[in-house]
Length: 169
Image (cartoon, rainbow, N blue to C red):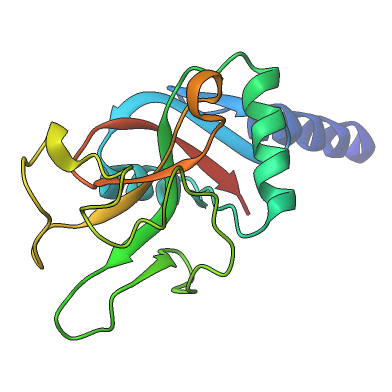
């Protein structure tokens, strides 16, 4: 009797743990894609709620793996948040960093020039706040779709609502 109960608990746990929350699609084994549109910080909070984080691309290998998963799932036209954030507060040196770890970017995949100012060609804050970013507005990391911009990054106002990809820890 004990053996049968033990097998049932293991099977039930496996089935329940493989079910994703509503509004998420699996992207391979390491990522999930949200079909809900949220701003950057809401996206980050949604990922954290399930023990995940916004996806990062800390090197070319990670960029390639994520690109393969996006394309394999037919999502190459979508744009979405990654976990990068441009810290421009007065108290800190301005820099791009990964929100989850606070690490500065050592690898980048920008569309156009480096995205450290609002005059950079890829800056797109116009959708929410016309004009230049100030110390009170934030820039976050958007990943373009693949058909036009080959999945490259662009700096975007964090209040913009986009789809997002969570990385499973």
